[in-house]
Length: 143
Figure 1 (tube, rainbow, N blue to C red):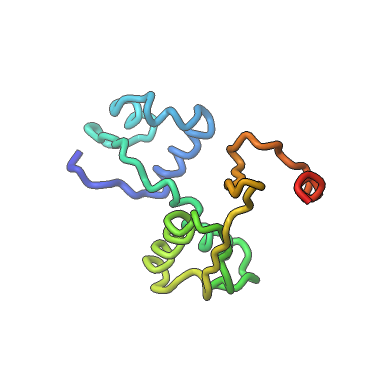
Figure 2: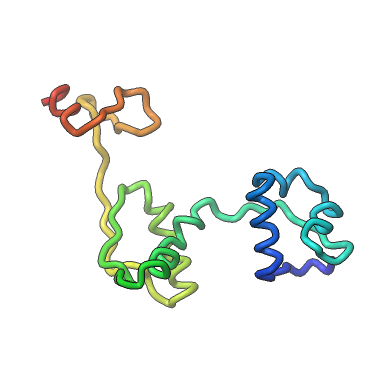
């Protein structure tokens, strides 16, 4: 109503339950009046359709995993991923950890290259190459 965000655990729980029952599109399908009624919000409350960074879920995984598994080290000894994660998981993890903990979520960050075919083209999960069922597939095929 006044443009301020509402951050309330009970309302978030109600919304989570509503999404579990009716699906995540409910946020877009219900108008402001109906959503406010479903969540017991004050009259005149509006909802927004801003997009949070797509990497936020993986970016805060360091916090979620360590909260569930206190035996794990925090920060992690190493993050290991391909070079395409510099602007993805590595960056979102670093930014969220600095915001939450004033430090990186890892001691060292290591990147590797990509598996390529005989022509030097990157083999991608979304590509049209023959999907291997085990590592022997590539050994048998390419030597």
